[in-house]
Length: 225
Image 1 (cartoon, helix red, strand yellow):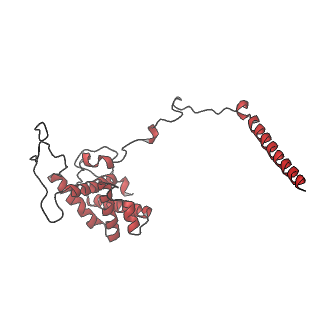
Image 2 (cartoon, one colour; image 1 turned 90 degrees about the vertical axis):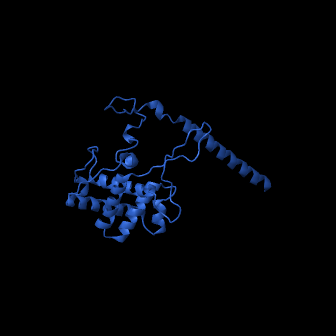
Image 3 (cartoon, one colour; image 1 turned 90 degrees about the horizontal axis):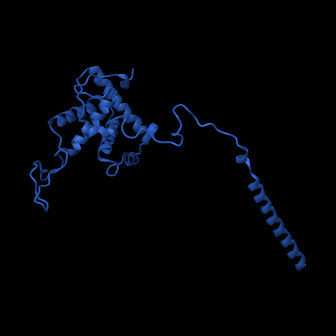
């Protein structure tokens, strides 16, 4: 039985179609998003952690910051998810590929492109994708064996990465959408549609032009002699 078919009891409510593989994948993406928005990083002046406004607009209304700041629960989940990578994945290359893929997914292709990372490090994109999927499956299988209580991620932060999201191509309008359900277009062989007389006339005109050009060439050669 693969990791995708194993279900794990979670502490929060999620749709039924979420299995352990999707849960682990979303938790890892939430971890990368939390790290990207946490107030940690390079040595220097600390980031502003208060909501006190610096300036006011023309109407003397304060402008509140809208930057996402992870709470304590998100930081705790991120710390747990970060430990999965080092605990359940032994291959250093697999850990590096997974970490860079998570960063590219969270920060966007405009800043960090996973395809560019694969090209820079001499990796084939399909091989890297299979390696990442295998790593997530390995983490999911290990969590199933350990029987831990898995907390769900913050859905507002990972909703764009959740499965079965976005446009369903089945529901896109097509040419035959005016038909009733179950019906199909019946092709009809109409004689008027098989009329190719225009093509025959065009070929006749082409042959006449070729014949006239050949006749003019022969007459010009005879006059020169």
